[in-house]
Image (cartoon, rainbow, N blue to C red; front, side, top):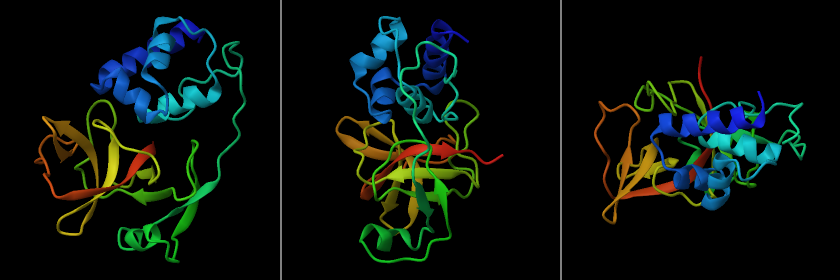
Length: 204
């Protein structure tokens, strides 16, 4: 797969996700004009880190767009440090800086902050037939130090105290939490966004 095929695949995946280039760029930690130049072919050299960040932002395997023999790859990125897998009960205490029991640790597939954690999803509210999907049992990696924008998948705490994984949506100045499964209703304020999801390992 050459570079033109890679950028065409990225563009196709963005269309399938129903998200804007701006939203994907934000989730990947890139500037919107930079991603647009990648998609147009104006940028002919893209680092492994950027390719992996774009893939993760779109809910794909980090190496979806990586071809090791491609001349467009200009930087080698080694594996990133492992992060704790937390339960919904222990997450608030972890974010408060308390010592909590960790179920296990997993390697995060992308760059992340020191407070990044992983959660296992439950139920089918975030399962979708197209684009990003988080079936029950998936692992989401979330970074509390990454700002979340409309369209991002987030870990949030709703008014009942429950910890949920949802898509953040902003409309006319109001914020909602949306399930990827359309059979579930929107969740309105009040809620608190705890972290932005930066990678997803889908359950098989």
